[in-house]
Image (cartoon, rainbow, N blue to C red):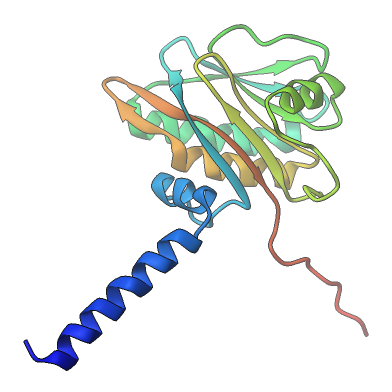
Length: 190
């Protein structure tokens, strides 16, 4: 190898090293999860994940059932396609408590949901907006919450990508995600 080639290889290695150091840990965690598009904020936790099994149910808050049912049905279809499991979709009062092993699709207007997610490090602030969502998963909880049906639908699209086969079940890794659109839509003016 000539001197010029050696210098090129060394410089390329240095550049790759600098790029790897410059990338935030959050991006590498999101890359590890292979999510498209990449959410704005992702934190992967090491303490297990949520297991979707034969007793898992999907809860949708009453009052939003009609609008949120599409997201719930899309999720149930994915689970059936990936594992053969048939999940029931049930309505739930905003003040209700989901039994263990349930996937909860909720609205951020519910103060209990916001408080729970805040305790887990997820802020339901104005940045989330109408099309953003919060997603939390650990061994006992799996919650997708948003301000609107479209935000909830986008959150479920991310959840569908997170589900991984584990025998006859699916597993969602322990993760916190806060996402919102990168670009604001603007109305066309006449």
